[in-house]
Length: 195
Image (cartoon, rainbow, N blue to C red; front, side, top):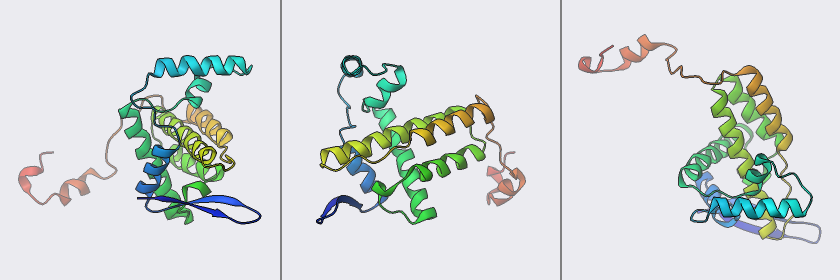
């Protein structure tokens, strides 16, 4: 299980998330305030809308979603899978084992890879939404621990969304293999080689 160790000195106070990728993600989900499973999404959005109006801020669907937590089990499962994939990628590519050290540049690189892979626009948008919620969760955790919320990935996320709209097909159902013959040849039992 991941632990969040508080490091304090005269000049700084920062949390260091330690442990496995899975442990870090679970810790962030549980302790950031993003977990709203079992509560009414409709009531939460109505309250957020009222708060945003009172503050004179934009009440667009995007801003409501950005301020809200995760209310559904399937959304939680999908987003946590993407959060873990992102952390594992950053650990492998950049040696970043601490989720709190992630930057907008890391987000930009990760999303650029997804777009370059030619995935569907819908999937890339889902990854953007998941990472936006991860940003919210990391900032929520920092606020709850009395640290400054320093994650701001909005520009990187918007650039990826814009690029996905321009470059990717809206629906992409191509699940073909690059070398189907090699795949079939790798199947050892002849009765499984139906193609």
